[in-house]
View 1: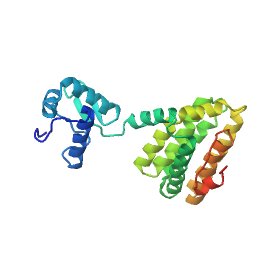
View 2: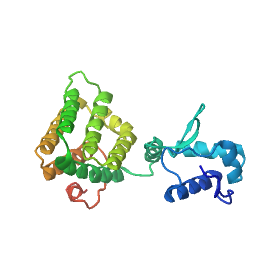
View 3: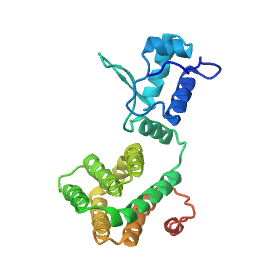
View 4: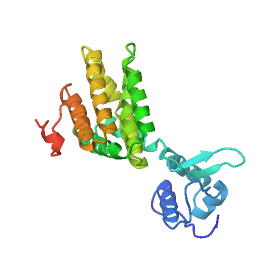
Length: 252
């Protein structure tokens, strides 16, 4: 990689300036996913920071999912080629701290999932239909426990998003479901008979899949809207819901 053009770090914290220069180079097509950054010694000189400060900066960037720190002969900092766990971890912490309330979560889920179901009805392939059906068959196991059931529930919704062919939507869906995993498990734990609720969930999932298989996007979107909002509003969540078409029906 060319060594010229790096600027000494000033004013901003080291990792912010490092990230800013990486971003500038990506936008200028000087760096792309999979590229190695200069080695630690050279990069610390180019940026005008100590190697200790640079290591701290790279650790922050690694946690954010921007770079991967590799060890060994081909080691060093490499720009990530696939989405990392940084976004998921950040979202989980922000939800745990109450920075987004349950209404925010519900509205976001409705936006993502109704779009996904509508598009899946148009774009999903036979293989996608088979995968979705296989997930639902696993959920029918009479001995299944709450955690496994919830994991399959999440997998079903994520797989619908994947079947649209939109990688960003699928990643956002996976991130959101991972972030609310504890919330969903807690919701089931509060139920007197979670298996009765599971039967309702199974039936609703089957209806969503039938609509997708029938290429009826509006029906699939309507079904997933009801599936999500009914779960929240019928199980003790305190929601003050906004102005979406499906959400108006559940306004308090």
